[in-house]
Amino acid sequence: MSALKKDFLWGGAVAANQCEGAYIEAGKGLSTADLMTAGGKKMPRRYTMGIEPRAYYPSHDAIDFYHKYKEDIALFAEMGFKVFRTSINWARIFPNGDDSEPNEEGLKFYDSLFDECLKYGMQPLVTLSHYETPYSLVERFGSWRNRRMVEIFERYAVTVFNRYRGKVKMWLTFNEINILASGEQGLVMAAGIRLEEDEDERKVALKVAHHMFLASAAAVKAGHRIDPENKIGMMMLYSTPYAINCDPANQLELLYRQEESMFYFSDVQVRGAYSPRARKIIQQVQANLEEQPGDEILLEDGKVDFIGFSYYMSNVISVKKDSQQQGNFISGDIKNPFLSYSEWGWAIDPTGLRIALNQLYGRYGIPLFIVENGFGAVDSFEKDGAIRDEYRIKYLKEHIQALKDSVEQDGVDLMGYTTWGCIDLISAGTGEMSKRYGFVYVDRDDCGNGTLERKKKDSFYWYRKVIGSNGECL
Ligand code: BGP
Image (tube, rainbow, N blue to C red; front, side):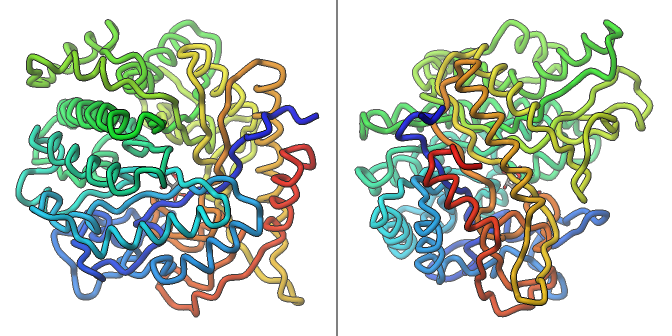
């Protein structure tokens, strides 16, 4: 007997801007992600003011999923996927974000993509906003700094809820909404916002978050009204934090970081209100959210049905303020001596996933969904042409074991598991292609060269076995 329920949702996840390409095809407008240049381990991506003729923007062609999705979905079906997580690119539907009519060609593309999934009995799980915003909204309104975005987003959400009614029943509002707690880079990724000189990033982030909370709540409300069968979740980045030692000062710091960078966000979206601790944070930061009458009711009415989260690693927190010892909530500078690390410096920690599941389920008691987990690594071909990615299999195997233990032994209610980048795609953090997560290899390099040909890795056959046995054969 499997530890997991019979209808456990196994699958994989991608995001529009990291795989589709076709960045201005079929009426699509420019999105913030289309202005992010390629970077590398030591070279940050740049967010340019317009398209620079000499720069390379990996989202423009990505892995050309826009034209190859039938081939790719067939490969996912061959692995037995029950669910496929992707995002709708808002700028394909409303090229300027708030056009008077939606772009029919864009709507048709997703019709056809979702039909293709359903053909194989694979449910789409759709993120409304995954690290991209129509760029026109940044230029005209300053993006999510502006409260007008709430109704603009609601209109976009209503349009796609109506259009895909009956086809899509599982949704996520904002990808990793708590990335907003990670400084300017987070503001760029989540909202395409550039800070003015001397502007306090935390003040801006809390205001942006307030607008996104309202937009998410409005979308949840509308989604439930349009189709009562819709299940709509929040999505957060969960990186399990440990204090560097048992010094109470470090333990307190750990608690504060967790509140500020994670629970601040999930409390509002799950419980429908700012917690007393969140109110203190707003006060201490002296953020002016410009709340309006009705906001509290909307947040209460727009509570999510489940919590989706990404989990890749844990990190270490210290109260010491020198930069080498600080750590942050994504991937700190402090190494954990009990763990090994990926080539990109991400701690490999399956027990951290079990802790995350317990922390979230213990705090909220609503269903959880691991919507991203995976191992970014450089893959190479053997002489016989095979890709023997046993390092990826090992990582996934250990994490699946941890999630099974948390269900079976700890009683966590887990809906499903979608591995990140089930097909190789563009890295969000670095813009590289060589940081590969897929079961399917894509022939493309960091400069955009390659045939785009797809090839199954060893992990492809392994994951098919895992799904076929509902997680029993790891
Ligand atoms: C999450 C994002 C994804 C994805 C993943 C892996 O934060 O939601 O979009 O890319 O991380 O990160 P990276 O691509 O930087 O390796």
